[in-house]
Length: 199
Image (tube, rainbow, N blue to C red):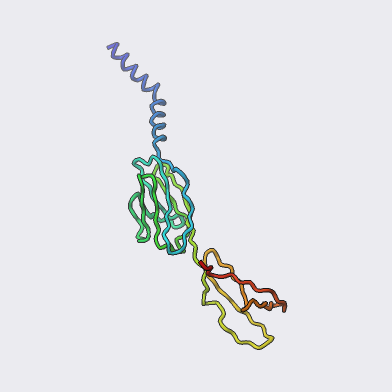
C-alpha cells in the first residue's frame, strides 16, 4: 500500500509539475502546423470583356479550407473547390492545394474592387488583392454636340462627352490644324489626341 501510495503520488506530482510543459508542446506543434500565405496576392488590371485570375498561395493547408470573398459586398464566392455564388462567371481552381485561383470571366466594370482569400483557421487568416478594370475610351452620343449653323461673329459652344476607365482626356482640333478661337477672342493652336490609337 505504501508503494502504491508513492506511485500515485509520483503520478500526481508529474501531472502537476508537467502541466505547463504538456500544454506548451502541443500548442507549439499546433502553431507550426497552421497554414500560412506564401506571398501577397498580386493586384491585377484586366480589360473589360477578358478573364481575370487572382491567385492565392497557401502553405501547409492541411485539413483547413480556402475561401474567396468579394470585400465590398461581403459575398462568399467560393469555398475550397466549390463555387457558392450564383454568378456563372465565377470559377475556382487549385494546384496541389497550394495555389488557389479565383477566375472571373467576361470581366465587367462593376467587377472592379477588392477580393479576399480566407483560411478558416481560428482566428481566421486572410489577405486581399485588387482587381482593376480598363474600359477603352469612347464618345458618348448623349451630351455630345452635333453639327451647328450660326451667324458669323456669334458665340458657339461645342460639348464632347466620353466614357472610359481611366477617364479619357478630351482635346479639340480643327481640320487642317487651323487655330481655334477662344472665348477671350484669342486664338490658340489646336491639339488632337486619338481616342483609339492605331495598333
